[in-house]
Image 1 (cartoon, one colour):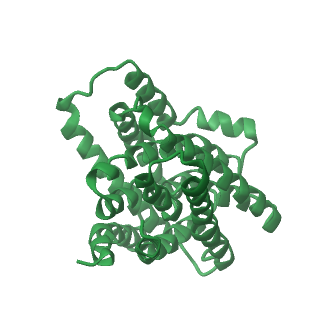
Image 2 (tube, one colour):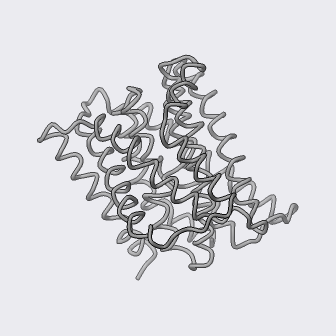
Length: 307
């Protein structure tokens, strides 16, 4: 089976869920904001808490994975914010920088990483995904919120966000060495499945409200350049520097970082922008386009660079 076919089989259900959300929104009047609120306030906190509780936060050998993930994300979102300010000068800069902060490491990344890498390497993706999720729930949400609110009011809105406290609780339980209880496995799988379905359906629900005016080709093109040109270029530059000069990182991690740089825009941004009223239709259209591009882009680049 070719790499493209293996990847397609893994992610095809995601597109089917988007389609279901679109049908529900277009023909049944299902509200994307209500589904987003339910997902953010009830489903997301449980999944985030369980992921962080189970994560290995003490593995010094791979400490560079979360550290470099944070560095990449901060640099790219900073560039996106400045770039958005120059291009639009309005709250589009918040939409752009919030969406570019991280990629879809969960809904899209998890199936892809296990399709592309050996299991031992793929398991390390959890650290990268966890780090990006923490920043998305905290910094990412604050960036989106300040599109309509002042920085202080945006912080107040963040402090009312249940996933933010679920993140803190998960870190505390993890650092206290409280063992994960196997009796919770089934409950966690139920919530994780619901999280995947709800998250992807929000994209379809948002697209159902999309008109030609909302399908902003200018915004989408700028977002795609940052997501699929700037992000990979930054990561690849670091890989080449590390390979030739620094020698900080095990070569088996290079592919994981390249994948981080090529992921489609995070589906969570559809839920956050829908809840905050920050151009949710534009956010959803950018997510959809980036997800379609990534399906071909990721295996092509991975094969080209032998990663």
